[in-house]
Amino acid sequence: MTKTISLLGSTGSIGRQTLQVVQELGLQVAALTANENVDLMEQQVRQFQPRLAVLYRQDAADVLRRRLSDVDVEIAWGMEGLVKAASLDEADTVVTAVVGSVGLQPTLAAIAKGKRIALANKETLVCAGELVMDEADRCGAEIIPVDSEHSAIFQSLRGCRSKKEIRRLILTCSGGPFFGKTYEELESMGPGDALKHPNWSMGAKITIDSATLMNKGLEIIEAMRLYRLPLSQVDAVIHRQSIVHSLVEYVDGAMIAQLGTPDMKLPIRYAFTYPHRAPTPEPPLDLLQCGSLTFHKPDEDAFRCLKIARQCAAQGGTATTIMNSANEEAVMQFLRGEIGFNDIHRRVEAALDAVAVKYQPSLADILEADRLARQAVLHS
Ligand code: MG
Image 1 (cartoon, protein in one colour):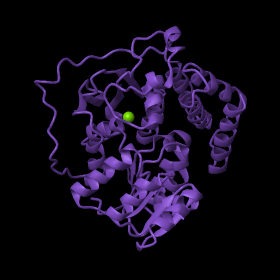
Image 2 (cartoon, protein in one colour):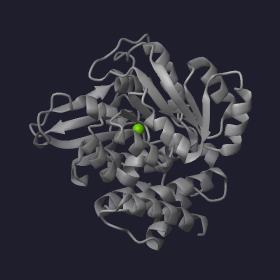
Image 3 (tube, rainbow, N blue to C red):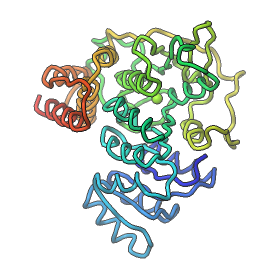
Image 4 (cartoon, rainbow, N blue to C red):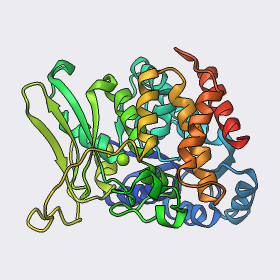
């Protein structure tokens, strides 16, 4: 069980909910990191008293240092700061709640120290899943998923004696704000439409990924890496109510699922308390009030990102890295109003055409694929 954490990405949606769980469970905080939110970081440092606070942007870190001159805390910036936060000896658990492939190097640093990883940064496993999982095995680092679907599968796999007992993992997907729309209807959707998620309150990047269904594509790859299963054994179904958080189908036909209200604090809490469970003051799911539970097949003709993700998952190597990095850039372009909704998948496809895939990639190959894919999107 976790006692002290380093929290990478403390000012985002998962980061803020993680700090609520930290208070609830009475955990210590060794380090906090964020991108550039000086105001919230200052508050968090005063409240949680970490030994190290990191802002990725150097100018923001300089402002933070001045603001916290009365507090005994070390301030750092950049990738070096993130890696330092991930490696602190005091922390037994590192929560990776940063958005995007920027999480890769700090995650590897935490793994090298044999820490428990509470993994809320799916892009890391999409970019470099095999490398990360092999390193975790080699260093004896536990990776506990915080992503709600993967936590549900993790919980539903308790008691599973062998991978041979698993027929399929079934990820559930809310369908996002554009469920039921045709490809042509999606063409005119703007950031304001896409940011209205029906069930979960999340950051902007993942909310757009949920609207394109790229999020489910990333999560299929995340599940393949975490549980070392082929694409043929990982499936996704649309489940509009977000009550069934995902399922394991066993070879004897039994399906085991985890259900609950859509609240990220449950998977966060479980990543800290595993293999135990801690009581929570939150009201549980009321089965008599939650209504009908429905399941649909995802429409991959309208939501092309999901189809692309499956193709890249089947291809392997750096195909998933290129796809992920191109998607990160394209989503930023969409949020800035520079491109349309369906241009997101077009930019991802263009990057996959432009950048050559490498198989059994080294970390250097992965970082290079990440760079080239971003460049391809920015120059298309
Ligand atoms: Mg998820």
